[in-house]
Length: 109
Image (cartoon, rainbow, N blue to C red):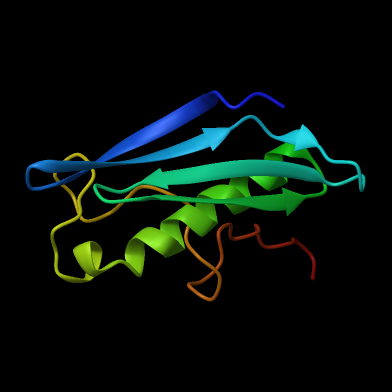
């Protein structure tokens, strides 16, 4: 598993930048896929990982985790954390914030 991020997003907070980095999902010894992520804050680095049944799910869950961590931060709650000058951080929503996808209605039901 490489320690180099394969994707990242830069957020702004006044003079500071906050970077969310996602490593490429990889098959773990237990059979699940893991996607390690990091948030590089001005004063620290926060690192964790998310697991999924495949690499796509692991990446999506990692993005949702980062989204939740950013939204819970004092910077976001004070209105100082943005992405592309917007308060929408443009990441998948966290758990409990509604459906990520809305399935189409089935005809004839």
